[in-house]
Image 1 (cartoon, helix red, strand yellow):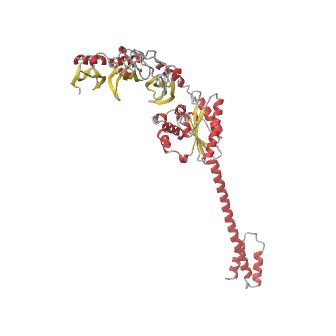
Image 2 (image 1 turned 90 degrees about the horizontal axis):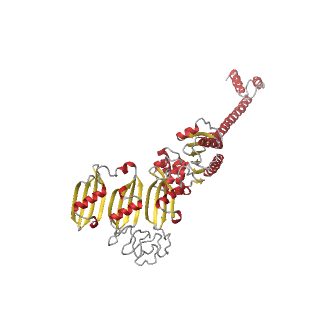
Image 3 (image 1 turned 120 degrees about the horizontal axis):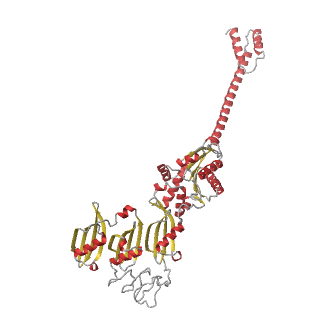
Length: 552
């Protein structure tokens, strides 16, 4: 290496030192020239020092850069977690369904409409970046303005979705308190349902309901709770109901506490007649007063698209069951049966004489009280038999036959009398003898004024059960006697006349309406004098077919 090359090398080395040139290079070069550069130890030492210093500075610079990047990354992660990421969700369901997405600071990131009603509520609102309380106030105010929340529909469902259960529960309580405060300021007594759901552990059945009907997880959870309590409730129809309607059903089923749904306040019944009015309607129809019955049930239910009240009560050993339209007060159905749990009569009979003794004529007293001259036995089980009794003192609804059987005609009249109609006003659709556990019974069915009546009457005249159900006009009119239609009763008489049998000598009788290829027919069956008769008679009275065979 010549001197020129060596000078350049030293020059380059000195230039790379990260300090200003202080004349070191000229001094080194001068020294080198004096000694003909024969001794390069000083230069070599300098280069080594410079190299070590450069390496140290390099690693310090890299470490500093990494530290800066790490600091910015940590800051960015914290900022994202606290300000940008969704930490929890709040869903408000009334009929509008609105989801509020929050960050960790409980600032609103977004408000999402869950259905068309919610879009109406959110129209023109800009709520991003606001506090949770501000958003809740704005949303409830809009719901009240558009009539989704008022005194007649006062229920709201709050669903907190937060995987931190403790934080979710704390937020749930604050929101419920705030909603009650807001509604109170609007003079509305609110009914707030609330629940805290961990999204990571949501029931698969609930998720399926939400996806199937396009409703929130919160409302789906409410529907699932009701169905779990009463599997007969229709899932698809429940999904369409408002939260107030669902809340009324929830209260009547008593399901809220079992499901973990917290409830504050009572759902409004102002849109309906109310359970007390439903009781009054049922009692009036049964001809009873409240002080003489024991109520077993008075709850709201949902059947065939109609919200109704189910009313059940016992009186004098009979259980009455009514379904009453919650909006109109119409009686949808009624039924009676023996009240098994009913321990005593509401009359004056003693506890060891539940039914009361019959008097010499077998006439029972309406209050179950025994008469002073009753010597012949007990009256019927309920102590309510009307008319003369049989030889054993059992009360009947009409004149008995010799063996205590009132006969099918008297059974029909007993049914008409109980329903408050006359035979000329009804369309008889069924009149037959049946046996239940060896006991002879009469089954009577008829239509009157769009209502179908179904009676089961014991051979001694006791009404075992009865039921009535409203039918649509088409169904009712289909069973009315039309022009040229002789009716079921005339068809029965035609069969007796053709067979040469008197009605009084016939037994095990059946008479009902049937249709063959759209043609109305009457099917008449009875037994007499050891033979069994079977007739099919057209509506105009023509005997289509008949059969007589020995009764084995």
